[in-house]
Length: 420
Image (cartoon, rainbow, N blue to C red):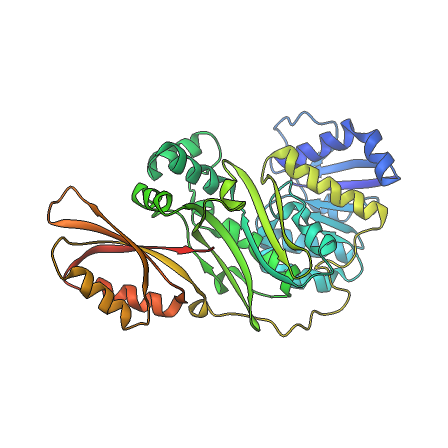
């Protein structure tokens, strides 16, 4: 028998305990041993969770219990879980975690501490989608060329409503909060930070890149308008918030932002709260992984899959490498990213304006690919929308600054990157 202790018996933790109990026979058949939840840790002991397991409010009751074989960390947060997971590993216990923030900041330290002790984390990225296993195992014969993913269901739900129903950002954010998809403070989701943690985990497996969220480009969806949605549709795009990891020469781009993608691409068809990740391998080509990115049972399913792998003895090294990945790949600076861009700006509706804008862009070697002009409520002001050919991020940022200084340009300039 294998005994489990759960740090954090909330929505996911309770689902883990229930599934292990209710599906005990099939899980035992697949794992080869009986798996029993011995105890769990909660903050509030007075709350009834409808479980028969022993509960404590002291994490050390699990971490230091000599009878517990596997510690499941579902607390959330960074530093306290790090100390507890570290202690569990030092006590010789295997660990399963769904904590993306913990791994975004401490995955390499934990890998060093774990050594040959299993530390599994399938549920940390894209919930019930087995993308970690795909990268660590199924695609292990490939050099990974790129990863693109819808990694936050809240953002995808909101953008889907904006595209399909014409919803305004503020209105659909309120609905998302009422439905429980977005928190009272939604910044972690809509600002791109949640997706960035997941992207960093995938980039470590694919490229051996040791980066923190502060090191990469992260932007949210807060500035997307119906004008942008209409332009995207007219020119054959959909708008998605993507996490992107891409090998470019001897470097790797890592970025999270709203992105215009071709409407006929696989990733563009992923709607609602669903997640999806596409991976391009040098041998297999493009593969796609789709499913629920959150939810108690979906995430618990991934947690229990890790537990079963540990019981079977199938776990392998934490980040997928028996030896160090000496690829020579480095994180590309944000300013060296190269892509296409969409710009939205309000300008004086008069002759000579377009010439002034194209001349300004030309100073930074930026050329226009497509353009559209839309009227505004003010007869003297027009909305100018256009896409560019490929250029470097640093030049685009300098160009936006220069455009903003033109007398014919009014207000802020919106920008969305384009991936084809």
